Length: 501
Ligand code: NAP
Image (cartoon, rainbow, N blue to C red; front, top):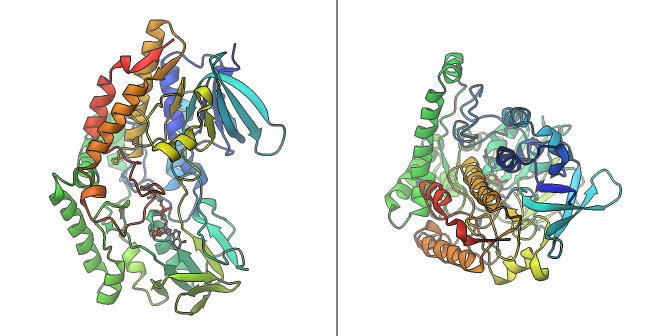
C-alpha cells in the first residue's frame, strides 16, 4: 500500500493536464491518492511565478489553451499574464484539481524501489519543517522547461548596490519611474519588458549579446461581440484556433523543423521580420545592430509591435559592446565605459541543461540516475514521455517532447499518451510499466534522423545562442516533426513498446 497512487510534480498547465487525464481514467477518487506537489504557494506554474511588467503570452490564446477547455472570456488575442493565471484557476476548479494540490512543497528527489515496485519521493516544506518520504506507485514530473532562473556569469554581479531584479522573480515594490535602468538580455521576456520600462524610466540601457528575430504581433482587445460569439457558438473559436495554429505551424514549425524541404517558409518569416524592423527603425546603424546574423528559428523568435520603436526614443540606448563587469554603481563594457544605473534588470532567462533535465534527482532501476545518464550518454525519452530503466515514471519536460507550435499542443499529446498507456495497463490488469530499451533507442534514432531536416542542422545557427541547445550544442529540446506527426504518433505508437508487470 503506497501513500499515493500518483505523485505529479508541478501544478502548472502540464501537471494539471496530466491530472485531468488520470482523473478521466478513474484515478484520484480520494484526494490523497493523486497528489499534485508544487514548491510555489499557488498553482499556475509559469503564469503564477512570472509577474514582470508587460507579461503576456506570445502565442494567441485561442491556440495557447487546452482545446477541450476553450475560454470565450479572453480579453486580448494574446492574453496578459493575469488572464492566464485566472484561466489556470478556472481549470483547477472545473476539473476539481484543487483538492489534490499540496503547495509550498519542494520535491528533493525520487528513487524507484524495485522490490516494492513503487517510488519513494522525498519532500520538504518550503516554509521550513521536516523532510519526509512518501511512496507512490506512479511518478510524473511536470516541472516546466523554464523554471530555474539563470543569473548571468558576469563578474561583480553581486557587488551592485542598487536594485537587482531577475524577471522571473519580479519585485512588485521596485520603483522604475524616473530611474536609470539597465536591462541585460534581449530574449522573448526582454522584448515584452523593454517597451514598458522605456515608458517609465528616465534612462534605459539595453545590453544585447545576440539580437532576436521579431515579427509583427496581431494583437488586439477582443471586442465584446466576438467574445459573445465564442461563448454562444464554440465552433467559431475552434475555427479561429485552427486558422491561427495553421499559420503558426507554417511559420514556426515548418520553416524551422522542415527547413530542408521548406526553406521558403523560413526565408519568408525572416523577410517579414526584416520588413517589420525597416518599417519601425529608420536609423540604419541601429537597424544593423538589431538584425540577427543567424537563420530564423535557430533560437526562439518572438512577436512585438513596440519593441523596436522603444530603441528610437532618445533616452533608450542599445549597447552591443560586451559587458566586462558589474560594479557597485553600474555596468562596465569591454571598452572601459561605465554606465551608472539605479536598477539592474536581469532578463537572462533560465538554466535548462544544468538544473532542469530533470529538475529533481530521479534514481531508477538498478540505481540509474536520470540526470547523469542524460548528460553522460545523451538525451532521450520515448515520444518525449518515458525512459527505459525508469518504471512507472513519466517525464513531461523531456528531450524531444516540445512541439514548436504551442506548449498546449505538447501537453495534449502527452495527455493522450498517458490515456493510452494507462488504459492498456488497466486492460491488462497490471500495475507496472516500462518502456523497452529497444523502443526508447529506436525513437531516439528516428528523432536524430529527422533532426537532419531542421534549421539547427541545415541553417546557419553558429552565432545563435539559445536554450534550445544542450551544453554540448545539440538541439534536443524540440520534437523535430510537424504537430500533425506528433498527433498521429500518439494515436498509433505500439502499446507493446512497453513492458507490463
Ligand atoms: P532567453 O530567451 O534565454 O534570453 C535570455 C537573454 O539573456 C538572451 O538575450 C541572452 O543573450 C541574455 N544573456 C544571458 N546571459 C547573459 C550574459 N551573461 N551576458 C549577456 N547577456 C546574457 O530567456 P527569456 O527571454 O526569459 O525567454 C525564455 C523563453 O521564455 C522564451 O524563449 C519563451 O519560450 C518563453 N517566454 C514566453 C513568453 C510567452 O509569451 N509565451 C514570454 C516570455 C518568455 P544570448 O542570446 O546571447 O545568450
